[in-house]
Amino acid sequence: MDNYDTLFIGYPNWWGDMPMIIYNFLERYNLSGKTIVPFCTHGGSGLSNTESTIADITEGKMKDGFAIPGTTAQNDRDTARNNVTDWLREDGFIE
Ligand SMILES: Cc1cc2nc3c(=O)[nH]c(=O)nc-3n(C[C@H](O)[C@H](O)[C@H](O)COP(=O)(O)O)c2cc1C
Image (tube, rainbow, N blue to C red):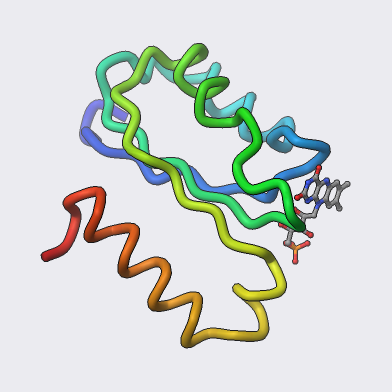
């Protein structure tokens, strides 16, 4: 983990929360000071409160997260690609 400054952490929104394996990951490493970029698929709830949950656990530097309906991600690749590109641009990862 020492080799990484920025982590993109992706998960499905389950019950307004993250799957337990994401908690295992976040608690397994010292991510304090890392740049953390959350993204999720969902069925209508967006990111819920997962960004602040990740911030509380990791004390990382949070970038604005990204949420996309699972159906869009699966069935409308053009829209998904555009939305992802816009988000990465807004977060400063691409020009
Ligand atoms: C157990 C379970 C709980 C879920 N809870 C939520 C929820 O609270 N809010 C929401 O927007 N979507 C919820 N969903 C929908 C998932 O976020 C959605 O199916 C997933 O992001 C799409 O990825 P998949 O194709 O792997 O299922 C839930 C799905 C499952 C299976």
